[in-house]
Structure formats: C-alpha cells, structure tokens
Length: 514
Image 1 (cartoon, rainbow, N blue to C red):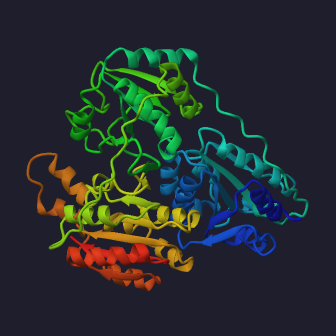
Image 2 (image 1 turned 60 degrees about the horizontal axis):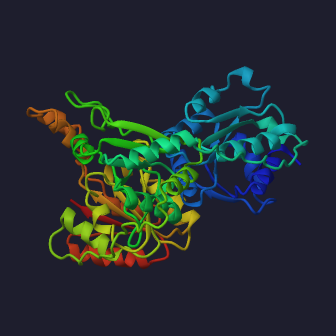
Image 3 (image 1 turned 135 degrees about the horizontal axis):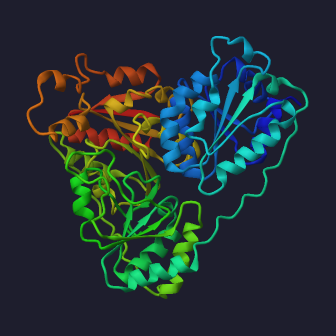
C-alpha cells in the first residue's frame, strides 16, 4: 500500500475516524484513499479555519482526536487562529499537512513554506515524515502524543512522495502513558488549607468540568469544607443543569472578576492556572486573585487531575457529604420588543435536554448562562483562546460528534464573519445546528473597552468599530450557502423561531437585529 493509505488505516485503527479537510494537490493521495478505507469519514470545508475549529469541537465532545487535513504552509496558516483556540482548550487533535515532494522543495516553487515553523507554536508534537515506509509509525506516534496528558495538537507533515511511495505499513498506536498521580504532600497541603477555615476557591481545569462523577466529587469536597467551585472564563467544556453542582465561571471583565474573587484567601488549582486578565489595563492588576492570597497547585494539567480530586475527597473523609445541587428552574417565555434579557429568558425556557451550547457572544449573550443554569442537562462550549471566529466551526464539530443532540450556537455577527463558510459545511452534512446571530452591527465589546479608557472617543475612532454601512444580510448569507434562515423583530418571533430550530433535524439560522 502507499504511504497515504498506511496513514489513513493507522488513523482508523487508532479510533481517529473523522477528518475535516480542505485538501490540495499534495494531499490528493489521502483523498483517493477514502474510497478504499470507508471507515474514515471525510468532512469537506471551504476554509481551513473551519476545519481546525470543527476538529476542536469534535474533540471536546468525544474526548478523542479528530484529524484535520491542510494544504501546505498557506493552508496551515489559514487554520492557525482556531488552532490557537484548540491549543488553549487542551484537546487532542492530529493535523496532517501536505508538503512538496522531498526532491522538489529545493526548487522553491510558489507554495514552498517553512511548515514546521508555522506549526511549532501550537504543536506539542511535530514531525516531517522522511519516507513512505515510516508514515504509519509517525502517524501512530502522533495519535499517542495528542492523547497523552495534557492532550494537545500533534502535527505530521507529509511530503507528497511519502504519500505515493508504495512501502507503507499500518502501525498500532503505542500504549498511552497514564498521567502521574498528585503527590501525597500536595494532597496533605490542600487538606490543611481546606480545614483552616479560610475562604477557599477551587479552580477546576479541563476535563474536570465535563464529567458528572468528577463534578459530584468536587461538589462533595465543597460541601464538606465550605469551598466554592470555579472554572476559568475560557473553560473548554462544562456540564451544566439541574441536579449538578454549580461551577462558577470567572468573569471576563477585570472589575467583575476582582469583585467575584476578592473574598477568597486561598485558591486550590486542579489542572488550572491562576486567573489572569485577558489584557493589561492601566491601573488594574493582571492577576485576578487578591494580593497575599495563598495559591496551591493540587495537580498540574499533565497529572491525574480527577484522581487528585478523588484522593482529596478520601483524605477529607468527604464521601458522605451532600453536595449543593442546582435546583431545577425554567425561565418564563418572554414577549414584547427584543431585549438582551428577553433573549436569555427564551433560551432558558426552551433549551432541551442534552443540548450542546456553543457560545461566542460575550456582549449580546450576557445573561445566557444565568438563564440556563437550572435547565435540563446540557454542555456549554466557549472560545478558549480569544481568537474570534470559533463559534460556527465549533458547532459543526460538535454536531458531527453528537448527531443526535441539538446544537445551539450563540454567535456575534462580527466574529461570525470570520468563518461563515461553516454554514456551507453544516448544510452539506445536514447537521442539527441552530445558529442565533446577534446582529448589533458592531464590535460591541471594543466599544465598551474604548469607553473604559475614559474621555470621549471621537467619530473616526468609533467608526472603526462599526460593521454596518452596508449592513450584513445574514439571511442572504445563510441562504446562499444552503441554510434556512429567519429574521426576527419581536421576542414572540424569536421564541417561535428558536423552538422550530431546536426541533429541526438540519441547520438553520436566526438573525436577531439589535
């Protein structure tokens, strides 16, 4: 078999059976293999940033790597913004990047690039295969690296002659090493902190917030000690809803986060970092915990974080504690003119059991988490790295991973324009996604931040933050890519459109002018 077939068969044997792709000439042998290795599902995209974002969403919901296929250096470069987000999410991904044949690179053809330099910043594992004979082995090691804690991105670069060479071999993935346990000393120190009587916050990193059993362990620890549970603002995935211990998300706005955390004298980190602001602000601290607070790392991301929590529960003798659980509560259906509060109430009233919410709507979507906290069980996914344009690609990946679950994408219009090509893939694959576009026709978050500078920003500065003139027509954009779309002007219309969307079996878009 050729190197490309050995690659695809090795991926499938490792459980990597979905590939989001925008291939070119150097990857054509991979495409040709899809008819011989039918276990691999190829999902076509029109832009590489959709592929990398979709692979992220798929990995968040399955816990296993997706594959993303890119064409040479420029193709990988197009994907980097959402690879930044995936890197911050600590999800397993396997990137395959085609390159010129080994003997052709010296001629400096137009698409020649230093692919390793482009990939290095976001890859925990990086290799260029030298021949078709080792492609299978390199692929198996890439999958193992992506899955080894902490999970991350493995990038395999394949010169085209390694794909067509005929001495490819299928190789089994080596055993994935178990993450090391937290030290007894670190557990003892955490016990002493929690028994001290000082106000304590426990910050949970991925994947602790997405498993019911682990959340209940954390909830029992909190109940036994009076601690409170937090997740970073850029949480990878959090399981929420009635009957689960609530986990509070650290606020994005610096002043809000400082107020949220100021009562705590000590912080225990489990697979998470100390909370810091997204940006520096004059006169405001970068680190969001109070000065003088004690900070203790119970477990690092590369350690067994769930095991560390379980060991802490045992040491505290907290298994009999009754955790505080979120009570069931539904918002009432709103009516009247569109308001931010009314939109949140509608989502809270209608969100179905098992929904996956993808949230890229920091300003217009405020209040959504509060309105849904007592609803049926659902998962919440957000932008982990701050590189905008993740929402719709993330929703595509989540829908491919979980075809029987409704996906609700809360999308700001400005960031939506970065990767609206995801709509085409959603239509092509008939994915069960409802996309709510908040059309305020501005980079509203930046308006707030320029106002925070003080003074009176002038019309030329404010004009740089507007995305009207002409207004974006999301109905035309969606319909042009095969997605059914509606524009709503009242809360009653929004409720009707949202209900229809969540009950549908294909993609649809709701434009909400604000």
